[in-house]
Length: 132
Figure 1 (tube, rainbow, N blue to C red):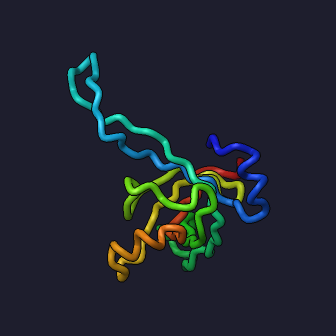
Figure 2 (cartoon, helix red, strand yellow):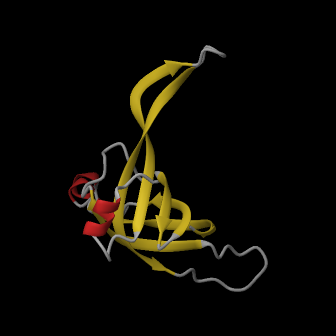
């Protein structure tokens, strides 16, 4: 994650989540080996304050206890890039744990109002590995 230490420090202690979304740039490049066109991408990073809700699960075979529900607000930048849509995934570090964050918008809300309220953010966080 390339969010500067100064930015993280300015939002301490609330900035507990770093999210890195990979989004398309709208242009394509040609792979010289295959000749196939591939979409160019860039990484868009955010600092957020997220509250994690522990998974509710029964101790049974096959149950996944690595997924947390999370909800909070973006801190820097304060508004999501319009290329980030419902279901977009980001590499994340939340509360010192690496994992994958999947964005979920309130589907009961129409898209016009969802654009205005993009400062609030919610989704799921799957822990991948241990603490950093």
